[in-house]
Length: 86
Image 1 (cartoon, helix red, strand yellow):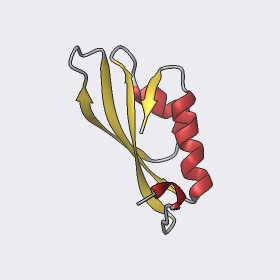
Image 2: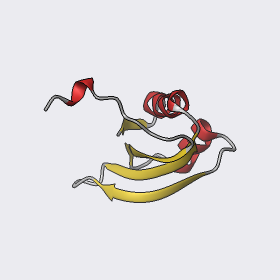
Image 3: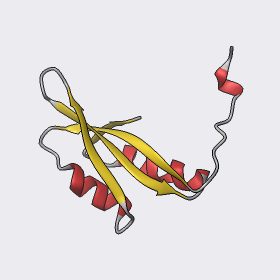
Image 4: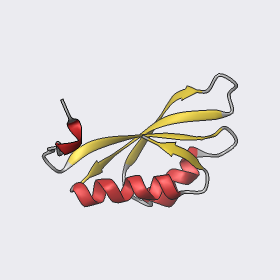
């Protein structure tokens, strides 16, 4: 089965979770404030790497459409203190 041709079908608005991986010395709350501003969001600590160099968090918010969802992903990914977003 080739999933590359499949488009994610969602009914918007929908709550969406981003897995955000950052360096341990960075503050996820500062990153979220920078990306989400006053938009409601929830942060839950998820995991840390074996050497504890990185910490991961689940960051959830209500997204209104596909462009909104992708833009937030892009902003998180491009933030200087973010290692990776899933």
